[in-house]
Length: 477
Ligand SMILES: Nc1ncnc2c1ncn2[C@@H]1O[C@H](COP(=O)(O)OP(=O)(O)OP(=O)(O)O)[C@@H](O)[C@H]1O
Ligand SMILES: [Mg+2]
Image (tube, rainbow, N blue to C red):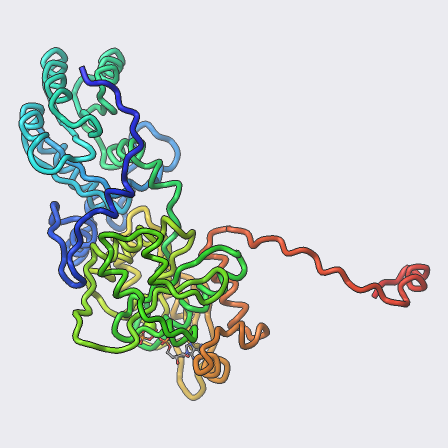
């Protein structure tokens, strides 16, 4: 019988110690249809990704749970499942495409308990083994004893069986099994079970990822992203890292008047051994609470394709150190961009009010709504509205066509935006009074989800020399 382990999962070490390829060389994936790839292929075929309700269909509700399903992310763990039943294998594959399980590496094999006993020691030690078995009680217990004796002590075990019996459940827990589920299971049930076993370490310390993407090139997405990141750091007095993922043409360093020697390209390259000390070398501090990971200042011969895995590891490391990671995405449709969009907590799609933007924004928003199960709908910002001498699609019509109300509609202001860009300043630094500065504040608060700005001490007014007289007259100034 295996001794019950109460180990805190060493998720962070595992993530940071993974061998990573160079920028642009995707790492081999155990499950080819994981996350982004699976979502993309399903949406392209006009189908809902597994586990996602199609339009008009009711979303699957977890059995026996009246309220909304728990939404806890499973951190970067490796899962090896041995399924006796094809339906269970399909359920686990469906769970793998869920945003909440997108970080985990799930390998589904056929064969039940015997296959698990034979396969648990082959290859790298998984963090979690899932065994689906239809064996009766006695045979199941005997097989599980062999499994627990053979597999690594730190590996957690979930058993999916056919017998619904509390006494059996207790016996399994006593034998070192971490969770027992009764088939047929739903994808959400499996995710909840994995999150219960591994979610704590990852869930508590995760900062939010807020991604900005333009519906078309040049619509002001980076400008919005930089202003919101700066505003967020100022009003919340919280640490924010702005990651410029537009490696070739990113403007974060220009907009913050910085000239860093190293930045995001080096951070991506070093993602295998990132820790706080190393990250600090790549970050350029722009203000007390805002640092940037800037894109290279010069174009050179390096490969500018970003490996989605390296990007994942970098963002994961960043969100462990700061509460907000704001990502400036290029207007491109690449695996790395897709990966960030699928995993971001918040997405801001910026569009100018014309037909091409409307078409692109619709495609992007529809795709994201469908693919990001358990992720909220993206936020829409209409930018450069009322550009002089340019016929606009009205904001109301634009948002009605997208079935999404804009979080903000920012007007064209060539003078303020042009001056701020040329000075390497944020709009609010240039002038607090501009309407855009107020809108950036509102957007920053919306994206920070109810995080209240710190209470600033009330400014003590210098008493007026007339105050005593006015008080007698019950007037104040
Ligand atoms: N509301 C606005 N009014 C006037 N000018 C604006 C406004 N918003 C952004 N701009 C200007 O538009 C230009 C393009 O902005 P920006 O580089 O942020 O766009 P982008 O969508 O990130 O472009 P890219 O596709 O190249 O990444 C900048 O010069 C910026 O100052
Ligand atoms: Mg940009």
